[in-house]
Each structure stands twice: as C-alpha cells, then as structure tokens.
Image (cartoon, helix red, strand yellow):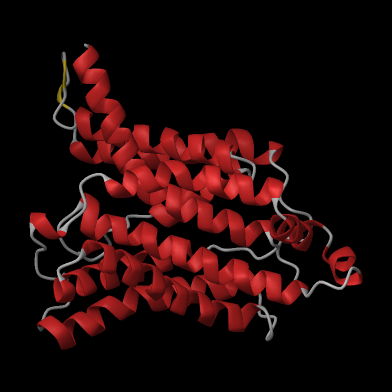
Length: 289
C-alpha cells in the first residue's frame, strides 16, 4: 500500500509539472492586469520548439530554454496586440491559440517531411527529474518576489491600482510587458516538459488542454502562488488516478470504457470551477489595457 501511494505521489508530481510552469506564468501575467488565455498555445509551441532544439543539440537544457524562448516570441505577438494596440484580450488570446496550433505542422513538414510529430528523442537526451525540482521551487521564488521585492509590489499594483502606480512615476505598460513575456517563457517551458520530460517527442495536440487546466488552477488558487501550486497538484492527481483506472473492471458491468476514464480530469476541472470560481476575486484591473 505504501509503495502504491509513493508511486501515485511521484506520478502526481510528474504530471503536475507542466501545469505548474504554465499556471505560474499565467499568475504573473494576470497579477499585472493582463488576461492570459493563450497559455495553451504557448505550451504547444514550447513543446515543439523544445523537441526540435533538443534533437539538434542533444541537450535537454538547451531544448528547455528553446521552448521557453518560443513561448516568449508568441507572447511578444500577443503583447503587441493587447498593450499598444489595445485589442480585446480574450479575442487576441484565442487568436494566438489558433495560430500556435498551425505552426508545428508547418515547420515539421519543412524540417522532417511530416506534419504530426517530430522524431523520437533518445532517453539520454531527455530529463528524468530536474523539471520536477524546478517546478516545486518556482512557486516559492514567485511568492518571495511578490511579497518581498519592489518589483513584485509594482507588479501587483499594475493589476490592482494601475493609476496609483502611474502617479508614483512607474511605467505600468513596461511592468505589463515584462509580465507578459515572462509568462510566455514559463508557459513555453511548461510545454517543453511535455516533449522532453513526460514524452519522447512532440506529437500533435499533446498539450490536451493543459493550458486551460492551468488557468483553472490559477482561478482555484485565487491568483496566489502557493495555493495555485496545490491546485496544480490536485489536477495532476486527477490525471494520475485516471491513468491507473484505465482498464478497470466493475462487477456486473464489465470493463469501463477508457473514454469515460480519460475525461475524468476535465470533469473534475468543471466541477471544481463551478464550485469555486464565484469565490475567487480576480485582480481589479484585470483585462483593462
């Protein structure tokens, strides 16, 4: 029993790792006042770029950085749309997600003459533990930054009272730009862990809605680093449980269809949000460009 629980805990942390990186990126962006529903798209390009760079260099660390930088490029495009051009942040984020899903097939066709995936990455060129360690410490670093630094205070004021921050002589748009780009990097890293940590290649739609689950964790955690971490672990646990339930037999009913088991994390996400979203207060200036 103890061995089973330890295995379940390890699986939970592994499956939570991409969510933690993406959710922390979303937290930084939204605490500065910029809605970020484009986490899914940034994870997609991050996963693809990380696989390509790792295959080219043989280093998962370089691949991880490559995935993060791909997320930054997509975040820069989003930032141009919503900050100087003041586009609707929901619409712009949706557009970024749609664009992101079209990039990997196009580039993969050029590089590998396929559109669905990249070649397999060898075990020696993939991570085994490091991303989990980074994911555990990242919320602590962000909590410390928000709570104990001047930059963290400015970031929070940009999302709560931007006019007061501007009156104090701080450039609100610069703070939001930095937050959006940082969010893009972290979401890209989250995507990278899918292709060079949890898997051995990039495959089409491998994010499977994790960017939106990260947003759900952000809301459930009320835009605070440590509660968001625990929310990600909760969703990771749901994913780990559904993997172990596949193939289960029920007396009198036979084998439970795998499709019903696979939707478990998404059903839990909907139920949890339905119960908690009304109790969460978003930053006051969220969505106000």
